[in-house]
Length: 324
Ligand code: GH3
Ligand code: MG
Ligand code: MG
Ligand code: MG
Image (cartoon, rainbow, N blue to C red; front, side, top):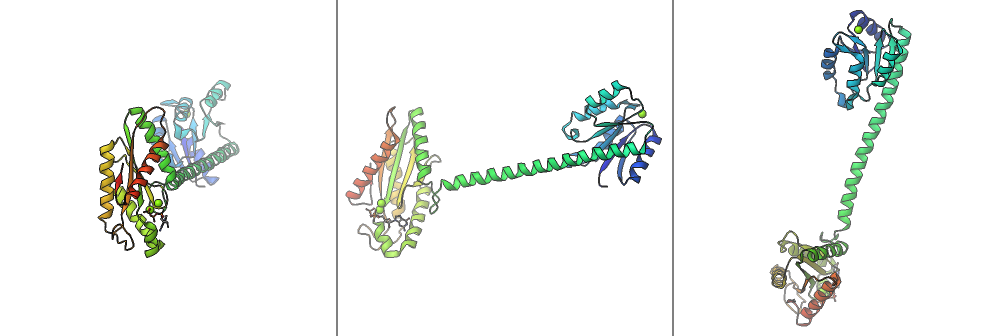
């Protein structure tokens, strides 16, 4: 049987007898120690992490220590918690046995050793051991599954807040981020900037090149916009169909103008052909910029409205421009 049993007894004839009985019953992997010191050397041979040692038969009176004390010591270590220990004892006075059980022993066998008793107690201890191993394996599996699920959940959560086409933050995440940055700006008495960007005559673009190309164009613009936001704290989002937004924490009027102009120019310089645009032979965008010195009773919504109005003005004034 594929179990590992360790016999600890200082008397050679007892070790031999136990081995003989156990081997006749089919237990093959049996190891020996003749005292405490040898016991501690012997257990180093087992991979306890993998649950390799299944049972210890432990004599109480040993030349270099007391079996009950050793049992207590072993049981304090996590690896031995689940390894059954059967005391082998010549004494059957109640006190010693009581102590052995309270030290964590599972059972005891009296000397002189009866074969029937030995095998009955060993097989019962090993049954318990097997159940514990099974339970541990199930727990481990459960932990692993839980860990995988948590990871998958996190990934789902991440994906659920990104726009499928462009990979930018979606509207939901944008709203969340704006709320968060608003709060932070309020706490730190910082300014907060916001850009709203809309593609000029994008309807004509779709009409001229088809929706598929339109989508490609959205992807390219999103990539460019991200690339041109240099600060790690900035957030680019797809606000709606062909509208994008950028949250610029701790940015004043000069700052947002500069970023907005950089993006407007950067996109125009991509020279994406737009043959039906009345504005330019290339794809252009209009940008409305707003910033706020956060005061107690203002709402982040106001910032969006202000940027929207600026965007509207940019369109009115002829597109391909930034308005603050
Ligand atoms: P303006 O300069 O005034 O912004 O003109 P416009 O044509 O861009 O504005 P309008 O709001 O009239 O049209 C927006 C167009 O954007 C209409 C729609 O077909 C297109 N659009 C919106 N979302 C998507 C999308 O996800 N993919 C593609 N290919 N086109 C989109
Ligand atoms: Mg002894
Ligand atoms: Mg639009
Ligand atoms: Mg548009």
